[in-house]
Structure formats: structure tokens, C-alpha cells
Image (tube, rainbow, N blue to C red; front, side):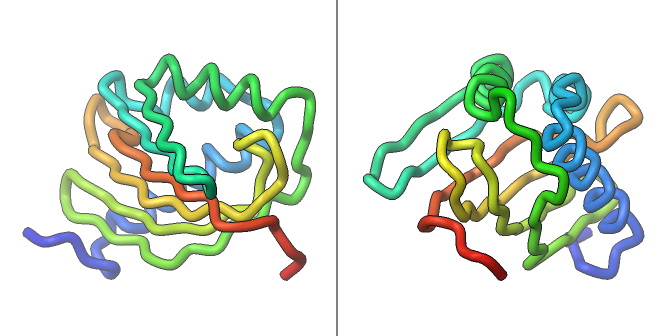
Length: 135
């Protein structure tokens, strides 16, 4: 079955990502370990063309180091696409945050799998776009 935006699991996938966004913004980093799949891979493409690749442990450390002591009481997120089927999900989203060491706009393509009774992120493709602006 193909992933669709109107599949009942699309809502669950979005809720899983919201839990991550609001958890990390409030420095509840244990949410990372629960939501990130053991085989998760990330690719972060910076404005200067640098590509950073990480596994689960490496990306969790990157997030902790770059979020530092900052707290984002009102995390900004814009969902462009949320789709799912019985076992897989996919989200395209824009965020404004400090995960790259400076506050800026990033776009993410995130792949999920339903395993061990929960939705887990197996891959994130992250692209920095520009300095964040209000809106």
C-alpha cells in the first residue's frame, strides 16, 4: 500500500514528531533515544555545501551540544507533507531553531518506521536555508 496523506497513521506520525519537537525544545533529550531508531541515519546539508552525516548516537550528541542551554518555549514548525501507510511514514517540515549552532530556518525530510510498538525515525535529511525571519 502506498503512503497517503489521509491514511489514519499520518496523524500518529505527526504526533510522534511533535513530541520530539516540543520535547527537545524543552530539553527533554530522552525523547531522542525513544524516537530515533537504532539504525537511524542523518544527513545535514549546510548553506556552505558541507554535508554532515551521523548515526543515532552521533546525532543525539550533536543536538545536545548545539541546543546547549537554550530553551525554545514556542518552537516554530510548518508541516508541508505528512503521509503514512501501515508501517512507514514520511514528513516534510520547516523549522526555525538553533540545532546548527545559530538560529535559522531548516527544512527536513523525515522517514519513519513503525517498530517495537511505536513510530521511530530511521532517516532525516536536513537542509539549512537561511537566517530565520519572523513569520
